[in-house]
View 1: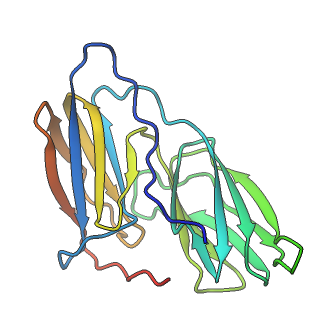
View 2: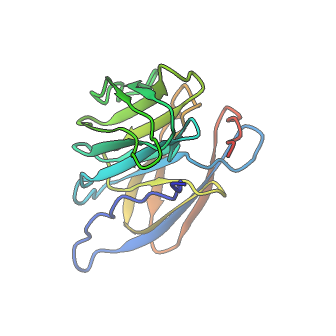
Length: 215
């Protein structure tokens, strides 16, 4: 099974001699429970290098997308591979209703043949160009849901099973914090923070209770 792991886009380059601090946020749901698979984005006043494009694999297994949430930079390639024995007809549409970056320029669909003994399942690729959230679904299996978050900041992390995102060596100074979750339909206000020598430890609470993941 493909693992749904913590995703960290390479940290920004910091000029020699510049100060840096550590930032940790925990994302909680409306009832105060930890929320995994939320995307936490920092926008430091000194942003550094832009996020780097990459190639990532998104598997379809037991009628699920693995990982459930994928974080990439603009220009990245999504490689879809069907690990099930039945066909999937994948579609990608904008999932950013009520958000500033309402389109990742990634409306697409593709049909992937199922895997047979000795024969791998279908594979296909698509490149995403613009920041934004993409909803993944399947025309053949309505329960299948996944997301791709195309980020415009190199300081982007997906929360772990404890709902925590940890950033190391963030440039000192003012920064903006953004939190995205697939079931938070109205974007939370961005939070201002000051990064310094002392660690920043705080939490953000969603206004929803996300459905529990099933494995």
